Image 1 (cartoon, helix red, strand yellow):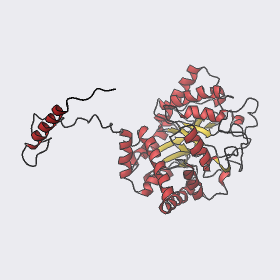
Image 2: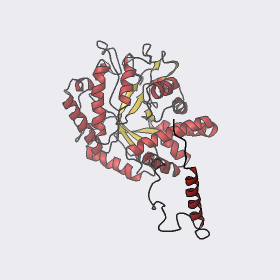
Image 3: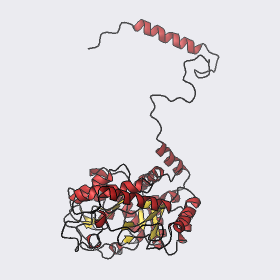
Image 4: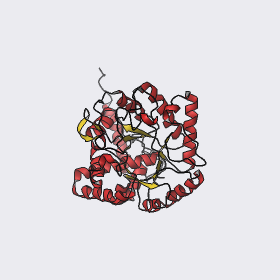
Length: 398
């Protein structure tokens, strides 16, 4: 118990003296302007009771202040251009698109790719764009020309000693960065059980998995994420909550379903562990349906998967990106505009379409819903802030 205070008269006297001293200045003066001998802190010092400003949040606020609503919503899209002809990317970047995806395969030299991506960086009217590519290894390696080492498939990468895998990942990051690529839609974090590889059409059949258990996959995927991040390239963990248990490819078939995966499954645990990396990777959603998570919608459109499981249960607060929703067979019965709206409603961030022709319809649909529905508008606000925060952290808002 504290002793009784016995100095109250002295305290009151001291306060009275301070008040009198403050009042003795010339009319209209303030404590800051009264006298050089004042105890007021010098200009430029920080009030110790005020938390320091967050520089990332300040960059985001500044960027938002310079953008109209259409420009803000455009930041939520990554749109594909074919590697055989990257010129359509010029108009996309000039129009303020959030990112450009280099689709297909190319034998172009890294220096030639860098000339184009550098032009995009210089011409962006606002935030600089994500320049994304599929550079996994094996049969999924978009850039194969001079300046890009041939990458083994993930199943072979996973057999390398840790130091060799780390070196491979570092080289991958350096080569992508030299070409102006700042977003790799890799690595695959799906877990394919041993003995099921051949039947797992999207992943195991092509050796895209790093292993057969979470213990196998997590350290290898983390090494790739870190190797990319060391050179300023953001990684993407795919395909949440996992494609390791399906038998068809959502790019080619509708109604692909995983009847096994739950919130406590091994695949989900692997993503949760990796998504908390200090390297701030993106998470790409699977386009399959998971009835034990949400029987009513594919993961891309599922608030249960995106908001409740990934953001809530696993605590991920970064960028959630779709797999392709432009040409994939999984969404052929859903109008393009609805694909974008439903994904954002679920809690996602970036809409990826490998085909440019559906982008205007998607953008207009989001803007129309944004103008008509205040609740959806607030959801869009959150997505835009998440998208721009990631760009600030990647050095694309400076």
